[in-house]
Structures are given as structure tokens and as C-alpha cells.
Image (cartoon, rainbow, N blue to C red; front, side, top):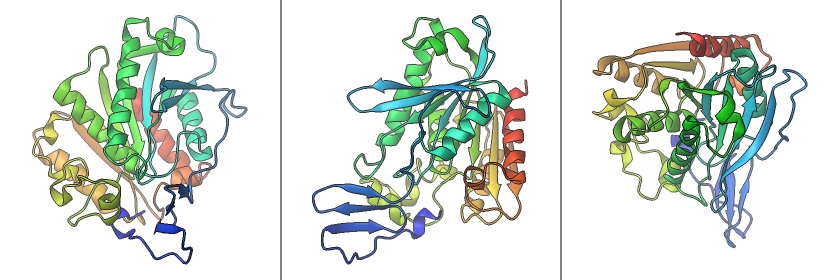
Length: 310
């Protein structure tokens, strides 16, 4: 999904004041109708993987929440790696409760034997950028409160090794994951050790202003905005982890952005290792759209290997 090309179109419905093709419509009364990413599935035991999941509220005032995943056969004394995952959707659609994300998190939790916190942040345009960043940061801080063993969520208290934490994200969620790792580097976050981040088909701004982001982000600084155009950040070497894995897809219009991010990290003074994997013949977030495909399975296997490496 090339966010830079998603300009509003005129609607034949007189009650619609703005329409973004294939994403959402805004009505005169302020109501937002999302055109994709609205289907949800409940949490609970997954019949395919036996992973258990449940939904938790982090901030009842804003609705920031998460879906948690616990792999099967986990003993009370067993401490597991934690994956904090941030979903994509152009900052304005999708949730962790969509079928594609639910399947993907169940698979990662089972195959990697990790606890997963899949973050539900507020969406633009009702909650303009940078709300998504602030909500995700609040969720990460909530997770970190469990490092002492007395947080509000027993699954995190009892089963997480806070010395082994990863961030993951796809598309816009990959952008948010990068920004969260940068924020830890700048501000610190006690009790949580970030080992690495995994970015799948990540969205970063290109050489021109992004039309959609301009609509969703009132204070967007154009090509100089380092949240969006992160490759230009002179402080990118402050990324607070030791390794990064980037997935790009051959037919994805964002492929070049992921490659530019890879090159920016390699050329910086960042003291870590970065790897990039390109999948031939596939498009944006193909692994979510066809999770049983051979190339999707290969992506998951690489993701799992990355988290299992010492």
C-alpha cells in the first residue's frame, strides 16, 4: 500500500466529506466508516496451535488495549521471550483482533514459544498521528511494569523473561516499532531489555511529502519529519537494540523504502547487525493475506529463528 498516492476522492454521497479509496469515509456528522480491517475474531484457545489468548485493557479512558498470547504447555516457572507486536494498516485501519493478525500471532507464539503482546492503539483520523505512537509507548510502559513480577497481568508476571524482548511490526506498525526502539534509546525504559526488532514490509516516508499522512497527521513536517521519514534521522544510531531483521517483498511499492532504511542503519554508527530478506513475486504484507502459502511460512520461520538466536 503506497500511502503517498492515497489522495481523497470526491464522493457521490452528499453526506460524505472525505473518502480515501479502500480505507475509510468520513461523514458530515463525524462518523468514520472503515472499508477494510473491520472483521474481528474472539480470543481463546486456538484449535490449530493450542495457543491461548485473551484481551486486556491498558487504559480504560482511551481504549488502549492488547491481545495477549501464551504458548501451550507453559509451566508456571518457565520464563519465555516476549514479542511486543504492532499491527499495520496505514495508521488508520486494522486492529490486533483481525483474523490475519490473530492467525499470525498464534503461529509466532507456538513456533517460537514466546509470549506475545499485540498492541491495540487508537486510529486516525479520529485520533490523529502521533496518537498511535503515544498509545504504543503507553502499552510498552505497561508491559515493563511487570518486570518486577507484581504487575496487573499474571501471564506477564509469571511467564516473561524481560531480559529477552523483541518488537515486531508490519507496514505502519513497522514504522511505529522503529520509533519505539528509538524512544527507548532516547528516554530509557527500566526493566525491559530490547534484543531486536522485526519489520515486515515497513512503511517509511520517501523523498516526497506523503498525501495520506498529511491528512492523518496535523503537525506533519513533510520530508523532514523523522517519525515518518526515519531514514533521514541523524540520530538513527541511537536505535536501542542489537539486531534488526527487515522483510521486503519484490512487488511491494514500499520495497525501496525498506531497503533505504536498511542502508541507513548500515551506514550509521549504530552498534548492531541488520539483515534484509526479500521475497520474490510477492506483494505488501503477503504473509498476512495468505498465511499458509509457502513463502509466508518461510517468512515466519525466519522470524522465529531471529527471536531464538542468542
